[in-house]
Structure formats: structure tokens, C-alpha cells
Image: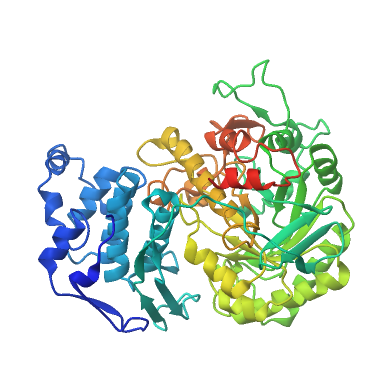
Length: 604
């Protein structure tokens, strides 16, 4: 059996409280039971023949951060096993368990994740400015394995890690409630749609409507039919420009006509470099991004801040069948607030608040009657403090966002209002302070297996309304393997994220997901910062994270590339993710009205 009865080797103390711990009474027996590579059994790893070969060949040389399980599971397993006891033990054994999973040993991986959950449930590592709870990640990984292996015919009952104050960016005020749960036998089951029941609540009275069913699940309806948002974050920025130098990356593409032929460049004139020679051959006709997006199966584009060409957006909807989620940054990056970058947007400054209100009002009045409009979206990860004080004054920001939602509804009662947050930070505050927000947009980058049970459980418990994953993405580059390996890893990662979204649409899981938006369509070469140059696609990682080699490469997030850059912004290099979605889960005609069969197939 790939699970251990820990009570045979120790005792659980203070279950359900902050003082929880597991005290080992038979370490020798536990080491033997868990097997090689699972805490507390590490010595067995060092005796393996393969380990000696890795050491002798120099494959374990290099800094620890370069040994990511997603890139090379076997090397990562041995590298993390040899780390000294001063290393964060939770992180060490979590990465060893993940290495086992990705290396084709799911049963041993399950033991590894559970050992982390039992022994190190409070361990934390930092991702940029946000805490990552290793115990929660281990529990999510356990549930993920159980979901993917129904043939095991057992489950984990009543296991949990609840963290009071766990949605802020601190750890000093955390209060834990931890329960190891019980392993139970269960019959193998197949995915079946949950009976929705009658509509109990609806938001919106026009062509776009959100409905809540008797079972608590939500669904987006367009023209009365179920609609899953198959979205794309579209920022086709030319090489050589940067917002740092005044380029409006979020909207200038709507008016760009570099060759002066009367056609907007990227949307209408992009072409695909089929043979990879960085040159437009006779059979590589200008077709435009809008056509490529339609063929992929995209039905919604996310615009981050207003429109600069309504006629172009009308063509997008009328000719290509693609709608718009239209946004206002609400002061992010100081856009709309009138503040200077160095000072940042201040959500306690009445003058800045009024400027942002006026910005949103102008957007709504200009676009509310257009057929291309699906919904409004306010902000973009403002909680991370991207040139704002929302990270220091979150309550003030969320109160302001809610007041803006109230204003929008007075101006336009026909379209839902969404708020874009960075992951689920401050989720408790949002639920309390934003009752007039209809949809929570979550920018989330959590890994190739999706977002995790704890993520969806928290949203279903606290938010209780529809959710769109407003950004999910993965760089198409890894340090060892470059684009050739990275692009394939990107496709796998994005498909895993989409599968998890589908598993939580109406009728499945939490039933609160209404779709998601891939970040992003095309590589942007300015994103590593002007110090690296806007004419070079940077290959230095910007930060650690749950990506194929453990790092984010911000200039490689596109599912299409720009080749060597000579034909920017027209040339497209289609990566495997484009084809994977086009011929996979997004192959259905638009708009998407899922039957039970289609949803189940998309979730498998």
C-alpha cells in the first residue's frame, strides 16, 4: 500500500490545533516502512548505484536552485537528498517527493508528500513577497495523485491545514489548525457531472448573465447558453519598445500601422513562419492574429486598459467571433491615477481616487453598448504593490474597487464586473469588502498540475461567487534545453492548468470556475527590464517559481514567438501550446456550450 499508518510508529499530538505535532517513537521502523527517499529515510538514497553514477559523472555539480524536479527528476532527487540538515526540511522532502512523482514513481511520491504533511506542516518558503506553505502544497499534491489514480481505491479523509490570517503576506500572525486525517478504502469512480438543479440566483439582465444553481455552482451564460471563457491575454508588443519609455503596451497595438497600408499590424497582418527561416516565404501569407486566435479556439481576449480602436474590436467580434473582457488598471503601474511612478498610486488620496473614477467612467460610457463587450475587469494584481500602496493599504484599495463596481452598475446593468487579484492573497478581505464585485479574477501561476484543492476550496468557502483564472502561463524556455525543451514543457503546463479549471466548472468540483485566460499570446522582449536591452530576448531568470526549471523567464511567456526579431511585430513562431489547444480542449466551435460528454472528456 502506498500509505503508512503513522500511529504504528509514533503519536499525533494536539490534532486540530496550532500545537499539532507528530512525535516519532520508532524511527527505525518508520524509515523501513516509508522506503528510500522519504523522511526520515535518506541514507538508502546514498547507497544506490545510480546515485554513485550521478556523482562520478559530475551531474550533481552546480547550485541547488538549478536542480528542479520538473526539469530532471532523477538528478533533482539525488541533489536534494544530499543537502545538509540546515536546509528547510519541508522543502527538501517536498522536492524529493515531486521528483519521485515526475520520475514515474507515484506511489512512493504519495508517501513522500504525506511525510511532509505529517512532519513539516508549518514550513514556509518565500516566492518573491508571498509565503508559500509547503504543508498545504504537499496536501494538494496528495489529493492530486489520488484524483489521477482512482485505481488505488483509497482516499484521505478529514485531512486539513487551516491557517487563520493565512491570506495576508505575513507569517508572524499565522495560527494553524492541522489534522493528519485518516486513510480509508473507497470504490473506484469515474467523473460524472453533478446535478445542478434549478437556478437560484442570477447576476445581470442582458445578453451576459451569471447564474447560480441549487447545488451552489455558477455558470456564465451568453445569449442564454453556457459559455466557458477560453481567453487570451493579448499584448503583441513590437521589439524595441518598452512601457518604461512611454510605450502603451496594453493598447497601442490597436492603432499601430508601421507599414502605412491602412491595416492594423499584428491583429490583421501577422504571418506564421512555417519553416523557421525568419523570413516570409510565398506560402506564408498575411492572415493576422485575429484569424490565428479564432482557429485556436479563443473566444475572449483580455484587454488590460480601455480601447483605442472600437472599429477594430467590432471586427474582432463580428468577423472572428471573439469578445472582450475590458479592463481598467485602477491605478496599477500608476495608470489612471496621475501619480508618479516613484511615489505610486495612493488609495487614500482623494484627487487620485477621483481621476481613477473618471477613467473608469469614461471606459464604461464609451464601450457599454458594444456587442464585443463580455465583462469589465478592474485592476491587475494591485495587491502586489505594482507602483501602488495597495500592498500596504489593502482595505483601502478593496473598498475603493467595490465603490467603482457600484458606479459601473449604475452606468451599465448588463455586464458583470470583475476584480483582478494576484493569486488569492487577501481573499478574506475581498470577500468582506467587495460585495458588489461579481467575478473574482485570479492571476495564478502554481504549477503544471493546476492550482490545487486548497486554492479552489478557499475560493468556494470564502468568495462563493464565480471565478476566472485571469492569467495562467508558463515560460517557453529552460536553462538546460533552451526553447526546444521549454516550449514542450510550456504546452504540458498550460494543458494541466486548463484541465484543473475545467474540473471546477459548473457540474464539477467546486463549480465556481467560468474559464481562464492564457498569459500570453506573444513574447514581449522588454519585460526583463531596460538594463538587459529591448532588442535582445533575455535568457536570465527573473525569479524562482513553480515552472519547468524552477524559474520565471518573463520574456518567454508567449505561446507564439517572434523568431530572431527581424520581422517584428508581424512574424509568428507557433509553439506546441498553440497546436495543443487548437486540436485539443479548444477544438470545439465557438461559443462553447459544453455537454456532459464534452466536459468530462476535457477533464480527463
